[in-house]
Image (cartoon, rainbow, N blue to C red; front, side, top):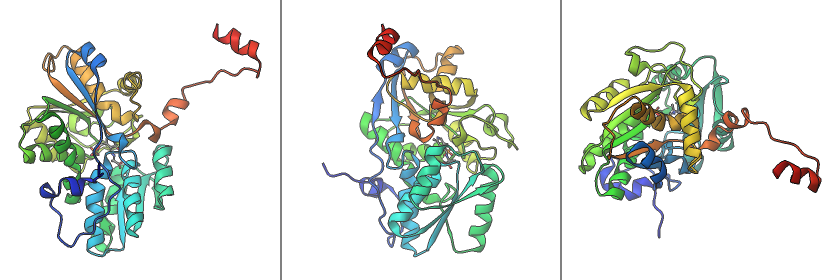
Length: 342
Ligand code: F0G
């Protein structure tokens, strides 16, 4: 099999200027993992679209291959983004391949270690901002309006062009769209892209269940959140750039935007790991939302085909697991091991 990135695989469905470069790490083509055991418990035909298996460990790679290819094609020398971590690593990797300077602005002290390490390893200039993601994004918007630096946050329409390929893949796998798509919502680029993708591909549309963290739920509350807070740092966002579009997508799909607590997010992370799928906390929000809906008495998911999108790998945020774990220690003696185990 010849591996292809999303631009080559879906070239007839992606808008990209003809002079664009082709910068790819063969992103996309992520597995749609059946979850029969959990599905039986929840009363639906359940699958996980595991986007954590993209080259830098998150779904952002799909959009970034397109945005960086476009930027490199028009000969900019630098790309910049604000990020809670995944966008930063995802921008830095293709930028390194294209020989571009990557500048990433992150909220000080609020980025999980696996993401920070990725951005540094790929050679990005990492700048910590004393404020939230929203403050970092404002700075990025201002400097890209004044200086010739390409903005690669999902405000950039080329990000959506790449991101929507996840919807195409799901339709290709099933032959049609699922009944429901459940996914976390932060800056709202992903949910907007999925909706764009499903509508464009014309294989039916799922209903969308967008899930925010309770402490960072501007789209549920109906107003921006000044100091967003959640253990799911990836979606610690109070003023989503594509919030309006996300709400429209949810309305058009006859779906919902709901919020879940950090406790529910961590519980969903555990449930997924118990099925062999380890994702970072934000990535389990989709499942947490589905569980909350079903436990709250909703029958709308019963016997439906449901896809839960898991956006980032668990290794992105190892300390959320290890900080809550104390390993047993024994002397290096057989008797100590035997008496511990038996
Ligand atoms: N899940 C993960 C793991 C994320 O990193 C993000 C966003 C989301 C979900 C939400 O997606 O913003 O399109 O609604 N992360 C961005 C970042 C903000 O900077 O990496 P969204």
